[in-house]
Image (cartoon, rainbow, N blue to C red):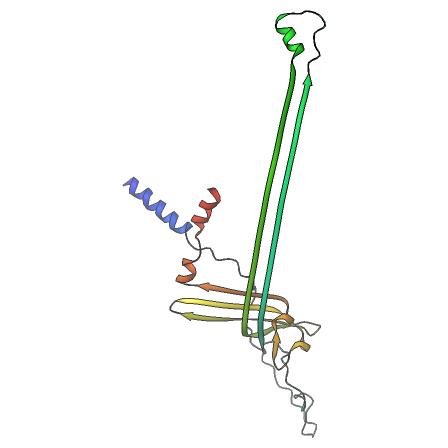
Length: 221
C-alpha cells in the first residue's frame, strides 16, 4: 500500500511538472475600454451649426477614450550574428642545475648536475553563426485606452480565433500620434512602444511546447 501511494504521488508530481509553462504576456493592461457616458450639453445659439459638433469639412478622427482605429500590421525583422575565436599559446621552461663544485657523490651530485625542461601549448578555436527572420502582416482593430496630455493615444486590442479547441490570440499595444492616423488607419511602423505578440492555445500549442519537467531534465543533463 505504501509503495502504491508513493508511486501515485510521483506520477502526480511528474504530471504537474510536465504541464506547459505559458510565457509571460508582453501586452500588459486592458485591451478594450468602453467610452464614458457624458451628459450632452445642448447649446441653443440660434444657428444651424453648433461649436460642439463635428466640423463640416473635417475628416472624423478618433481622439477619445473608447474610440476605435485600425492598425495596419506589416513587420519584418531579420538579424544575423557571426563570431569566431582563435587562441593559441606556447610556453617552455628550461632550468640547468648549478652543478656541484665538490665531489659530493651519490644522490646530491645527481641533484646538482640535473637539468630540467618543460613545455606546453594550448589551442582554442570556436565559431558561431545565427540568423533570425520574422515576418507578420495583417490588420487589427484596437481601442484608445488613454489620451496623453500631448494628444498622443495609447491603444491596445486583441483578436481571438478558435477552431476545434485551438485558440489563436493576437495582441497589440502602443502609442500613436494623431497626425499619423489616415482614414482611421495607422501603420504599425508609426507606433511607438509597440508590443505585438501571437499566442496559441490548445492541443497544437501543448504538443509543440516542452513541459517544465523535461526542461529541468535538459538543464541537469
